[in-house]
Image (cartoon, protein in one colour):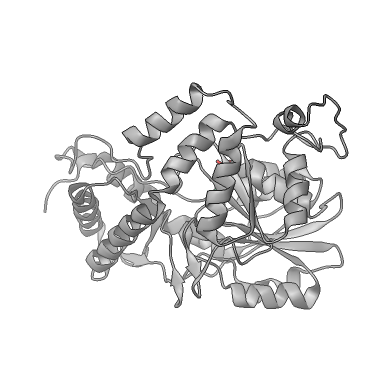
Length: 396
Ligand SMILES: *Cc1c(COP(=O)(O)O)cnc(C)c1O
């Protein structure tokens, strides 16, 4: 058997292949430079153009662009008037920002467990978490796979709750032919460099409700009813602050990049699907790891490609497999430590181990393998070879 790099053997690759990475071409650069030479660096025409183009891409009437995915989540929580004492059900297997956005509004995140096969929120677990104070459920399309929206909508309707979506992993994903973004009443996206398209930092809320869109545009601009460009056009200095808001504006420079990147979204989504299909095929016969399940009728956006270590078959734990793959030059990662186990949530909300047993168990076994559109076929083969090398070396 070939000696593992972690034990002094020759690594599969010399440079570390990251788990995700942006891709910038000359058109992107030219778009940003043109905006730098223009009159508007912020609150200008590129912001509306990005909002309009993403709305068309998703098939929704309106979108509101903001400074990050986290700002998008916070803006969405404020749009539904979430306040102190309100509760929001959120899956624990997500990035901390999903729950933090609830806390920003003084509300309480109520952590829901996940389905062990998909790592998506387990719908059968939701109803027992609903109380008189529950206001909303956040669906998180973990790894890029749409949640079971049929069931989530039924629950939300039956209890009079708002269904929100953290789709930061799922730009371009579809559920029964409908794009994620056009399903929940409010959906948040991120344009961070590891996500499907980037604007450096940036985010956006898609909504089916134009009144909410106006409210969110005020929220991102200090709660002021007009922005600088609108006042210039109307030849007035006068403005009023109607609600408490934030400065969550995104710049025209960022939007110029986002507009240019969006043109490549479908082509990149296809590349992500092809890489995932190749991984699925290569790993289907590999004893020692388990693959996640994908639901019927969905187009998975594959922000992440996650495998689970089978501890019945391997003689080492996830940390060892993680370190061995890193030593081989494969920049694997772990998404995520369940949010309720972060010290902040343990202390502030007395969240305890055992609250979400499936998520806690899954966390012990998950590893995210590299997947991003500009990966070459050779990079992909390196990931497959390294995974085989490590798993076979550690198999009982
Ligand atoms: C990336 C991400 C966010 C936050 O987005 P930022 O743009 O980094 O603020 C929120 N939720 C999930 C699930 C994410 O993956």
